[in-house]
Amino acid sequence: MGQFTPRVYSDLKSPNVLFMPKVFDETMQLLTDAHEYFYLFGEDDQQRIPVDLKSLYSCEMSRITLRLSSIMAWIMVQRAIFTGKIAEEDSGRYGLDFQDACMVDNRILHGVLPSYVCYLLDRTLELYERVQRLDYQVKKLH
Image 1 (cartoon, rainbow, N blue to C red):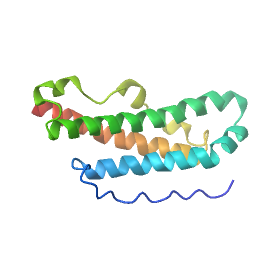
Image 2 (cartoon, one colour):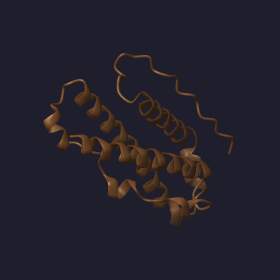
Image 3 (cartoon, helix red, strand yellow):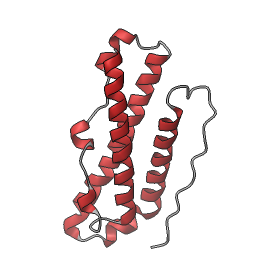
Image 4 (cartoon, helix red, strand yellow):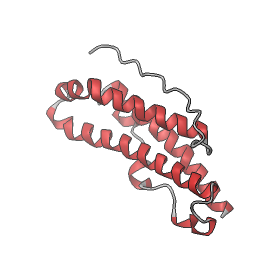
């Protein structure tokens, strides 16, 4: 397999990204990296993985996607609260979703799954943990 080099996600200068731009940019970068990896190398990696690990590989690809989509949804809700599109008193209804599935430490998969999948698992877990701490702080404020 060739060396995978993620494309750099350019900073968005859009006025729509008013809230937590670094978390947003990092999430978008990881979404781009994951998409490009799975699109360019996912099928080849799946063919190389032993049959008994194929479902594990698929589950972990889904976990990466779930973490990133949950983070993005949380950011968009926080932005909506910040801009007044969601009332602050309703903010308690919205939190970071799927914590049971997303807070799984995948370090035991290093050496089992392809290295870039493990890299994405590590990076998305670290980002999810940071957003979870932000979610806790936001809930304390409201």
